[in-house]
Image (cartoon, rainbow, N blue to C red):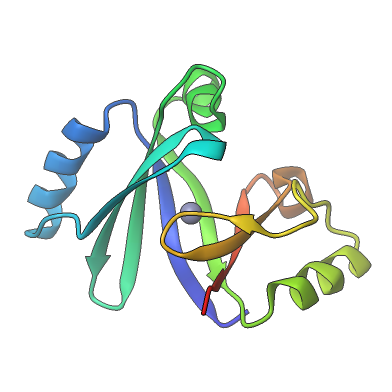
Length: 133
Ligand code: ZN
């Protein structure tokens, strides 16, 4: 793993959260993108070399809607940039980590992504992401 790629924050209302975070950072979101397979709408902010992803569930079955129902709004996941996601998945499985998806899938921001089960990592949902070329 090379660096934290972004931090994901679950929000109830993306439009409102966009305003809040634009005021916080002093600049607008640079990208908004839906990931239909996950039932989420995302919005990305750049903060220096770092990124923040806001996520709103677009239907009640979305993992984000369920997260908010159980735990309220807040930090949802930490994403790490990896060079070779398949190699990293294989390495982590060997280390005994449980993955929510063993095959990389298409995520927001032109990335291939995979998630570790939060129980594997002391309550933190870890996302691996590899830039698609
Ligand atoms: Zn993410």
